[in-house]
Length: 426
Ligand code: NIG
Ligand code: FE
Image (cartoon, rainbow, N blue to C red):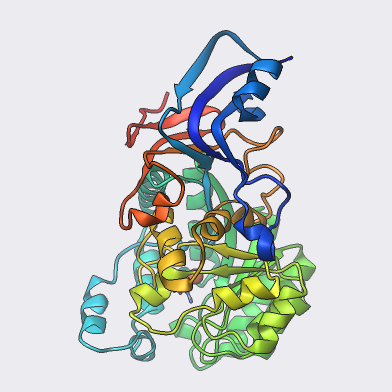
């Protein structure tokens, strides 16, 4: 018998997401559904997930153990948001107004707006400002069921302001239950002061900023915006090789608008993930499918930029690639941070089934940030990160479009959201 200090009892549907991660092809459609499901944990670690009989036969609640009533609710693993640009300052509401009137994202960028607008605001912000903004956003994410989030720098574009963004992530993470996976993205854009000497900025990244961020232990991943007009494929290769040599794991913003072989390169260099992929080539799909590089799709971008073109989720899944979904939360191309909404966009705009979208927001997303050993599914030994959703069945997670169905969030075995509200810390 195993003892437990927390029991989630009698869920109408429990989606364990078990059966091995990552999930490819047909396996992506298996959410590990258990009717009348029970989950139990001890000291924040799952000791049991399964049906009632198994629970009664194998688990003894400790005296004083807490019980959460799952009757009538759907339980699933906490969402992993595998791609966000969380610690930015300012907003781009004015530019959004221009886009509504017909300007494109690229036209704004060419006129010194877009990412550069946010670079100005982020450089002007203090560390404390960025911590406060990050904490507010982490709260909002948690209410939508995000229990692990990847977060990138990339609006500082110099040593001081990139490290300020990463320090803000570190400080916010220490004050908040959501787990934060930090990514250094100094190669998000060439800053204005290096516009006519981009080679110098690449040199600064390789010789100074990459080694310094590594030395200070501020980030686990290195990410780069590989796109014609931002960083070319040759520049991407050089920067990725330098970051790998420094000890970073690699992510690549690849083929967002135009394919320049970013997906192919990501697979070739053993990147953990290639992100966006709206314009991925047939060859890129084949290379990803044959690799361990996750395809992280960001349907909020096509939605938010009002594009008709979408990432070929169906073809990537059918080819056997590891497909995950994420928000890309940022002020320009995807100003949204709700994983329930992204799950719904996966179904409504990318042609995924509800089951595929659920796994893409949980287990495969955990794989895309290399946290699949500890989160992403409800199995003994993993963190007790559980969502309880007020829907009649898991299909309604998408069917009730536009709704946040998350009522209760358990993070590391603690109830942190109850009845849709943040439980006071303490
Ligand atoms: O993932 N593609 C590059 N970076 C972000 C957008 C950043 C911004 O517009 O501020 C993205 O889409
Ligand atoms: Fe992004």
